[in-house]
Amino acid sequence: MSPILSLCGIVNLFIILASHGKAQVFDITKKGATTSSSDISKSLLEAWNGACASSTPSKVLVPKGTFQLSAAMLQGPCKAPINFDLEGTLQAPGLGSSYSSGNNWIVFAYVDRLTISGTGTFDGRGPTAWGKKCDWNEFCGSLPINLRFNFVTNSIIEDITSKDSKQFHVNLIGCKNMTFQHFHVLAPEKSLNTDGIHIGKSSNIKITNTTIETGDDCISIGDGSNQITITNVTCGPGHGISIGSLGKYKDEEPVKGVYVKSCTLKNTQNGVRIKTWPDSKPGAASDLHFEDITMENVGNPVLIDQEYCPFNGCKAKLPSNVKISNVSFKRIRGTSSTPLAIKLVCSGGMPCQNVVVSDINLKYNGTQGSMSSECKNVKPAVSGTLNPPICSITH
Image (cartoon, rainbow, N blue to C red; front, side, top):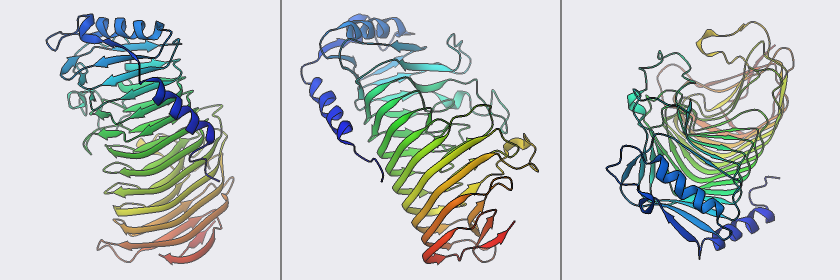
């Protein structure tokens, strides 16, 4: 059963929200920040450190206005719940500026009971970088990520916007019990490697009532992630909602318990997908469920791809060593922009197990022939309406 709202999660939510009612306010403008400052990093850090040291609930306030910020490392542990209230815009340097903190822009690390809220925007100024630092077909991993959450626990991110990140908008590593709600990601389709939210080695993460428009995966789930719940997310443009890619690196941890429900994908290159590298390192992904999904002009709406090989950077003829099991695609409807609407291509070395396909009703809106499906190294259990029919099975 999907852990959409656990009792502990509800209790933590109310504790965090209640704690901010009488919070002590640390306003960055009281620490010297102005909209004409070339860099407010010192003022922001001073406000954060003051709030973090408070033994009672506190608030860091970024008021309305646009503030230039070179980089920020906002670390805990803090003594009490802390609210980062973003009402204005924090704006990153352009590509030509020096980033002393590598591919970090704003990092929240080792913080418990953090709330980030407000009507404001984290503006990464991505147009200064897309297609300029890296070739169009190259992974641009050295570019700054808008928001990093490292080992953040029992926290809520709500209402704010991440705009035009140079790389991923949000990256989670080692996080537990975090909720993203009414969160917004905004970037054009042409933006490179700009995953909306990337989750790695994290547990009990919820993303709900969120809108993501970007140039790569709206949500991507990496190794070591478990109990991930994604509901009422609108995705597009972008590359869809993805588990993986998995198997590229040694000693990747299993992915287990991913629930994607009641989401809408619009004009995305892919729909809901699981992707692993051929000739991969060993790995596993299980209990992966996609239900009640609406597709609007979506390429490859239903996809398992264990031959994922972008930039021709792998030995595609060797099978993936990532074991995929206990997967369901249920009640998926709408329109496909590609004639191949359902593609379940599993590993020849370890075929997918316990894959269920039920009540799929898709319509191809193109002119390149009739709609079809493909199965490879998998024998799905099928039921209900199936349009297109499942499957031409090859081994």
